[in-house]
Amino acid sequence: MSQSTLAVAEATTTEAPAPAAAEEGAAPATTEGTGAEGGHGGFPPMDAHTFPSQIFWLVIFFGLLYLLMSKLALPRMEAVLTKRHKAIESDLSKASALKHETEAAIRHYEKSLADARANAQGIATETRAKIAAEIEAERSALEKTLSAKLAEADARISATKAKAMQDVNEVAAETAAEIVSALTGAPVSKDQAARAIAGLKG
Amino acid sequence: MDPLAAKYIGAGIACIGMGGAGIGVGHIFGNFLAGALRNPAAAGAQFTNALIGAALAEGLGIFSLVVALLLLFAV
Amino acid sequence: MAQGIDPIHQFQLHDLAGPWNIAGHEISFTNSALFMGIAVALVTGTILAAAARGELVPGRLQSIGELWYEFVHNMVKNVLGHEGKAFFPLVFTIFSFVLVANMLGMFPYFFTVTSHVVITATLAVFVVALVVVVGIARHGLGWFKLFVPSGVPMVILPFISLIEVISFLSRPVSLGLRLFGNMLAGHIVLKVFAGFVVLLGSMGFGGIIGSIAPLGMAVALTALEFLVAFLQAFVFAILTCVYLNDALHTHH
Image 1: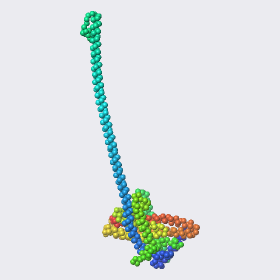
Image 2: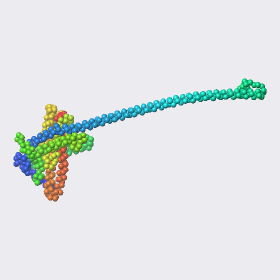
Image 3: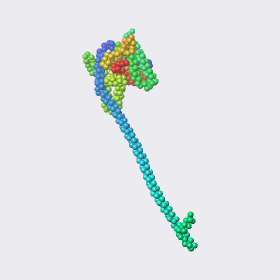
């Protein structure tokens, strides 16, 4: 630490002549005092002789920068940024439009799907009903014909049976008359025999 | 007293003022930090104000530094 | 040796062309003017190059330009609102000029334009004069109500007004001196610590060991100075906005 304090002391001593030089060195030619080594005239930032030059160039360069910025650079920068802004905005709106479109398409698709489903269901039920009706009709027709045939067959059977019964009776009466006449010798008419058989059966 | 010595003493005394600026700037940022820790959500919006306040407080310290520099080099 | 550690030498102006005179005033082209020109060229070149491609997805340079633009744009918009649009180029110019001038000063052997009180004071006086002109142009003489706060008892109103006027008049002083003082003090301190390193280094082995401390200090201070260089440009620009806000909106 003692070393650095020593350094401070030395640094300040080297500065010490400066104000003295400023006092005696009667400030002109300070701007030109470039070559003179130790002879910096006072404190440069406070040196009033450099003020006009600095203000002059500051006005020129600051004005130039302002003109360049306001007329040239910043509008271009703004154009770039607004271009990006617009591009993003249009992309976003395009995306949302596409999204809407997609949603509409999906809705449309779903609607037609439901329609088709309902349609198919209708057709199916209709077909089913039609087929059932057809089957019913066919069956009833078949049944009708069958029952008609059955009735006819029944009638035929009963007719045949009745005829057969009558034949049997006739045969029985004839046979009985023959037998009686053969046994008794008395002629028996066919009607008498038949009556007798009927009386037997009775 | 030697005028040169008086100048240097004056410059040194002028620099004491910078301590006040240091206290002020520390106060501002300390309070900003305390507030920021309580309500971190609002901290970002107020940082600019903290910087403005610090700059204003620091400016006063810079005044005393300039006075010191004037005493050292310009008077 | 004396030359090497003289912390003031860096602020010396040299004539690069001239001497020229206009109306008895010397306006030679100095190193200060040279670095102002470099700053103007750098700002213009960077922004123009950044905007030149105008790509939808920005590259590195374009990102820098857009960041720069948006930073100042947001600052103006936040403080001044929509009426501040007209002042955006001015604030951008002030911010960019001060920032680049400060940053150029961080290079060794480069001249720091903003370390001279004339430059900063001229900028500050220009800003405050603009505030007065714009304020009167916008609100007429009613703008002077700025100095008469409402809701103050009549008894102390003159004193309050006097204080307001003084505080307004101290604005250019504080605005200019703040930037000047920061840049000047930072560079002097940097130079002083660098001088310690040279001094100690010339003292033999022990000195070289001892010079590590000021060297580290100088490195840390350099980092701090970069921060200060940015912060002061930011503060200058935002105070410009705040002062212009007084000209645009007088109501408290």
